[in-house]
Image (cartoon, rainbow, N blue to C red; front, top):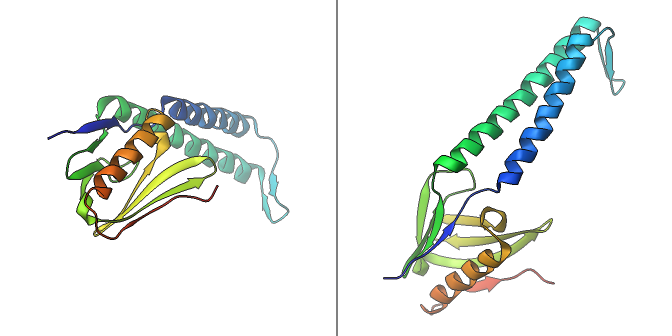
Length: 172
């Protein structure tokens, strides 16, 4: 029995960008809340007093800090949890989604359709099977080349079974 394993982890750069962006937002809103001396008018629709504007900035700072915390926890989880896609002889096992720890196993015989999708430069393999749909974005794999290798391997394993099914690719 042969298995091919592919690491399935978000890129560290993504976490660092999220932490940096929301950290900057939090710093800005904390500064605004501490030094606020005026009210705030939002799109000419909502007028806040000085106190209301300070609370508004405080809430935005708290939300930004919350996203920083989520980024830090997600980065910690990335380094402490081994997540991978396993392409075996009779099935593929993969985390249910990019953030899920739950692993699902789909037998090749249960695959009804495989569709390659491209959204804003992001390549995604959608596998429709008897129990639902599994989506694998290329950004969760080490490289685009590894993604292509994995798609080819899954396709080969499914084609070997015969039956009626289809592989759809985006029009180029």
